[in-house]
Amino acid sequence: MISKINIEKIVNWEYWPSSMFYIPNLPYAFYLAIKAKHPAFFSAANPAIKSSGNGTESKFLTIQLVPEKYRPKSVLVKPNTNFEKIIEEIQSNQISFPLIAKPDIGFRGLLVEKINSLDQLKKYLKNYPIDIIVQEFLEHENECGIFYHRKPNEAKGYISSVTLKKFISVVGNGKSSLRELIIKDERAQLYIDLFEKIHGSNLENIPNLNEKIKLSVVGNHSKGTQFINGNHLISKKLEQTFDNLSKSIGGWYYGRVDLKYNSFDDLENGKDFKVLEINGIIAEPTHIYDSKNYSYFKALKAIRTHWKSLFYISTQNHEINKIPYKTPKNFIHEMFLLRKYISSIKKLN
Image 1 (cartoon, rainbow, N blue to C red):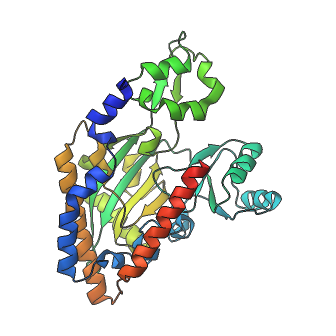
Image 2: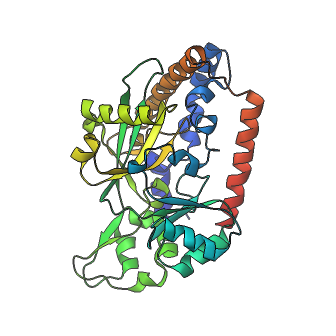
């Protein structure tokens, strides 16, 4: 018997697997490869990032490209490092609990957790013996993703996508348990398995009347966060801020920046924001997952439009700046290793 949750995930294209967004666009990808005369032309888009950001790059090394005032305090923890040394490094970088732990290589929120104590951190690092980023937990009120493009021979770029992120939450009525509130919520109930893992025995607690409970603090779609099309917020001021950010990095021309901020006016003017991640050539214009304000076919078209921009940026970098394309053999090998790595950490999860 098909459950209500499964029906919703079948009917609402927002929850469809990523293959449903990329397989229909493959003919266009082949066309661009033929036009560029190289199957891995896209590997020249962002020379500052390993393989231009194909998912195999270190998130820790990539975030170090961002000016210090715009990046969160972070340390990279290698597997089997003495726990006392880890704590010393965390403290020397002025990172306190709660904090965020996440894989150095990963995506879609895989293994990203908010850590509240030493014991919880020790358990997390023991369970996941891979390169882990320990990062300060940012208290900024809002989170968004901004997709930026700039041709290498031009001083000004443009923003094609602004995704506002609405963290999933429920409000107490003084009578229902947290579990009951989740089950009654149209969106939250789709992620009940996740929230059982996050909240554990707290699910049986009864929140106070009008008490707002944020169910997840990780701004990923896979964690229940709702993506809202914020393209109406694109402005010349915002583009100028990202022109400055792009030029301060040097070698980053294409991708999505995920960031935290309090006031969008401040963000627009380049003030009081922190970059969580810079995503390269595999980045998505995530506003397309706003299924209430966007259609599936518009989403497919938006992906093709972004690939067209990727083509021009990559080929210009190759022709003007002499950035070499990665050989198809090496690129495929990297993607094979990435697939193997993701499979292995999913098993850890």
